[in-house]
Length: 91
Image (cartoon, rainbow, N blue to C red; front, side, top):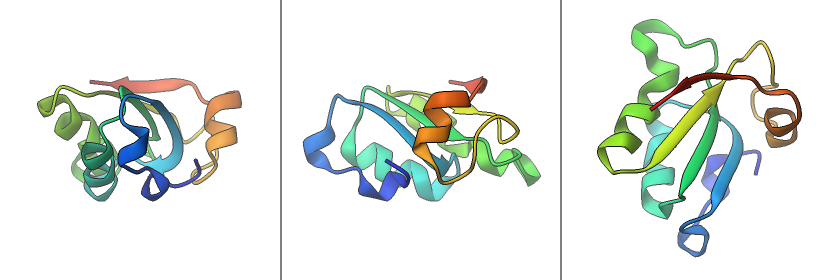
């Protein structure tokens, strides 16, 4: 899914590959849906690791997650994340 906001309760336990950044707002959607594993875009990481905050928040909930580098996948495009994304960070 291009946006993590498309994830819902029916997706619990899935492998979620999205184009969304790994920031705090994205974490809320993933935590609510509880996928087994979520892949985000690091969006260049940002100030105070803002593009990675979801990794820590999901880890606290016992949920696995990673980001792909913004240099290897288009932000907002799940197909790009899956096709060319290279893992940059994980929890």
